[in-house]
Amino acid sequence: MDLIYDGNNEDEAWGRSTWITCGHIEIADFLLQFRNRSNVKVCISSRELTVFEQKFHNFSRLQVHEESIRHYCEGRLTDEAPELLDCSDFVSSITGKSRGVFLWVRPVIDMLADGSNDGNSKEELLKTLDSLPSKLGGRGGLYMRMMENIKRQYLPESKRLFQLVKGLDDFYRPLDIITLFLAEPGHLEADSKQNLRAQNDKFLLKSWEESRPQWKVLHRCLKSRCGGLLEGNENVQFMHQTAKEFMSRKYLWNEIFRNSAGFVGESDLDLALLSGFVRRLKCCREAAIRSDTQQDLQVLKRLENGNPDPYVALHIPSRGCELLRSAVGCAGLLARSFIHSDHYVGLLDELDNAGDRLIRDWKEGLIMSSGRSHIADISWVELFLRPSEQKKPNSDNFTFKNFLELAILIDLLPYAEAKIRGKDIPRPQLQSLLLRATRFQELKWRVERQFQIIRGTPSAELSKMLLQEGVDPNCRDGESNSAMASEGDLTAWAGLLQDGLFSPFSGQRFFWEGWISTVKVFLEYGADPTVQWHRPHSTKDRHPKKIAMPDTVISAVLVEQPQYKKDLADIMELLSTAKAKQAPAE
Figure 1: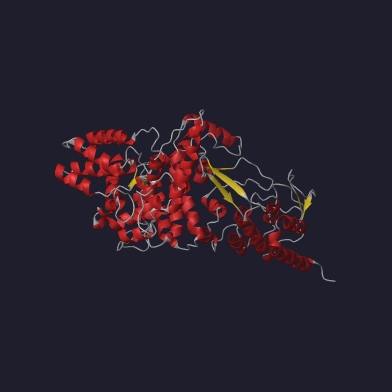
Figure 2: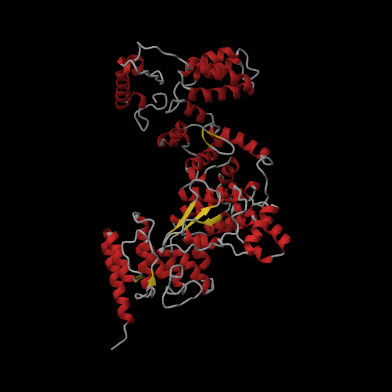
C-alpha cells in the first residue's frame, strides 16, 4: 500500500504506518512458528515488503512477477503498438520500474500504446516512461499524472462523469456507457430551466449491436475525459478500487477540479441519473418485451381462466428490469430528499410512458391475434413486477396495476400529491390507494436478481393526504361495510393495526416510527376506535384471542416494543377520546 498513498494529509503513508508494519511483523512471526514442524509446508505469496524480506531471507523463494509482467508487456505492446521499435527496451524498463505491481503496469502500457499510435518517437516514449512516478496515488502519483493529461476544456464533463459513477452503488448496476453519457448533461436541456431532455427524446429502440458506432465513440470520449480511470462499455466502473479511493480524496478532488463546474448537489446528481435511465429506456431494444406465439397463447389462456398471475409465462427482459429498477430507485432517493418540483413529476411521467412503450408492440400483437381490446389497459407495472409468493399473515397481496399504485407503495409523496390533490379521483380508487399506502406489501421484479424486492410500509404523509381528499378510514376496498371483517377483507384502519401484530420489521425503528405516526393520523381523521376483526392464525402469535380490537393491538405492541411506551400511551389516550365521542349522550 505504500505504492498507493503518500503525505500526511488524508493520504497517510499506509505501507509505512506503524500499525500496518506491526501487523506485518505479527503475520511473519505467526508463520515462522511452522518452520520446525515436519508435517507442515507453507507457501507464502506477498509483495517484496521490507518486513518480509528480512523475516524470510533464509527461505527458498521464487520471484514470479517479473517474468509475468514481462510477458504481459510484450503481449500488449505487440498487439496494441505493432509499429513500436525496440519493444524489448520498453519491456525491460517497465518491468524494472514496476516493482512487481501489475496495477502500475496496466495504465503505463495504455499511455505508451496511445503515444505510439499518435506517432511519438521512441525517444519521446522513453522520456515519458522515465518521467512516470513509481507510485499510484497521492499528489505526485501516476493517477494524478493521468488526470493532469486531460485537456482543460474537458474537465467539467470529466467532473460530472466521475460524480455519476462515484454516486452509484450496486443497486444501479450495470451502468452502460450510453446511459452514463445520457445522464452526464443533466436532466434539463442546455440554456433551459423547464425543458426536460427525457421528454424531448424520441422513442427509437436500437439493440446494443446496432448502437455500436455510438458507444465506440463514447468509449473514446470516456478515456479522454477521465484519463483511463473509468473504463467499460456495458458496465462502466473505476479501473480499480485504488482509482476510486484516489478520486474519493477530497483534497485531490478539489485540486483536480479547482474551477470546473459539476453537479451542484445530490438532488441535481440524482435527477441526472433518473433522466439518464429514462432516456436509455427510450432507446434500448433489449429492454422491450417481444411477442412470441407460444408464450402469448399461455398468457391468453391464463387471462381467460382468471389466473392471479397470468404473466408468469411471459419472457421478461432482464435489461428492462434493470433500467426500470434503477429509475424507480432514483425516484425513491429523490422523494426522501423532499424534492417537490415539476421536473421530478415530469421525469416520472416520462418513466411511466417509457415503461408502457416497452410493452406496446407486444400488446398490439396480442390484441390483433386475440381480438381482446381490454388488453390495451395492461401496464408495464403488471408485467415487470409481481407480488411476493410468500404469503404473510398481515398481507392481502394487493395487485398493482399502474405506476401511481406503485408510487404509493414506495412512498413517492411528491409524485402522488401531484397526481391526486384536487384531481377529483373517484372515491373507490382513492380507497384502494389508501390500502396500498398503509399495508405491508412485497413486490418483486420478475427477473430474479439481488436487490429485486420492493417493500411497502405505512406512510403517515401519504395516508394524511388521501384522508384529506375525503377517503373514509373505516371503509374497505370496494366500499364493503360488513360488521365483522375476516382475513383478507380488512378496512385500511384494521389492516394497519394488524400489521402492528405481525410486522416483518419487528426490530426496525423505521417501521415502528412510520406505523405509530400513521395510526395517530387515522385516529385524527375518524378511524373507528371500536372496530373488531377476526385475526389470522400465526404459530408465533403470543396472543391467542381470535378477535382483535384497537385496544388489544396497542397493548400487545407495547409488550413487544416497550421503547415506544410514550407514543403508545398517546395512542391509547386518542382511542379513549374517540370512544367518548361515540358514546350516546345521557
